[in-house]
Image (cartoon, rainbow, N blue to C red; front, side):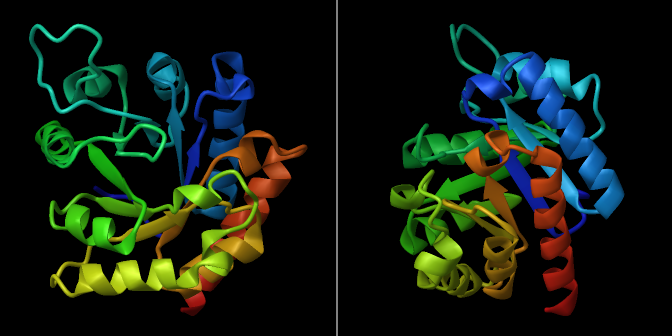
Amino acid sequence: MNWTLPVVILNFKAYREAIGPGAERLAYVAETVSRETGVTVAVAVQPTDVYRISSRHEIPVLAQHVDPQREGSWTGHVTALALKEAGAAGSLVNHSERRLGASEIAGAVEALREEGLVSVVCADTPRVARAVAALEPDFVAIEPPELIGTGLSVSKAKPEVVTDSIARIRSLGLNVPVVCGAGISGPDDVARAIELGTVGVLISSAYVKARDPQSFLTSVCEAALETFRRR
């Protein structure tokens, strides 16, 4: 993985505004802001949009989910190889809206690693964060599900979840980068997240549904970069 830090990961989920042509518009904005600010901005899109976005834009494109299965007779499964061939840079794993069992998480991380793809493994508690960090993914994303989509950021409402997650991961002797999400709604939330020790954030509805996505994302990236440099 050669992403520069800090990172902003934009999860398009299945919002109508972020599918097909909408995904392309939002990816174009993300690419523009990334180029202007120098911050790594990745977009997590629907599997049907991976090729559409990756073939037209240079920013990292993530899938929102990957299965642990390799190629073979697995109808309806999303494999790491298929994502790689579609142009994906990696995938989210175990998002709270698409949870996996422990063995499935391990299999998905290994499948991504075999294909040279980035793994962003989501965890809802510090305990889970420690467990998935032991798999040595590229990133651990801490996201308390009760705050997702609320506009109440984890970095302000539950900062101890972030700091405890980082401490537990470091107790393993690992330096797995941590990002946080859930309720991240503006530059202040992002700055606070990085002050707590993360290397970036995971944002969804605040970007997808913003009246001015470019202005919003610019403010977020500038806050991330300034705080990261100062830390």
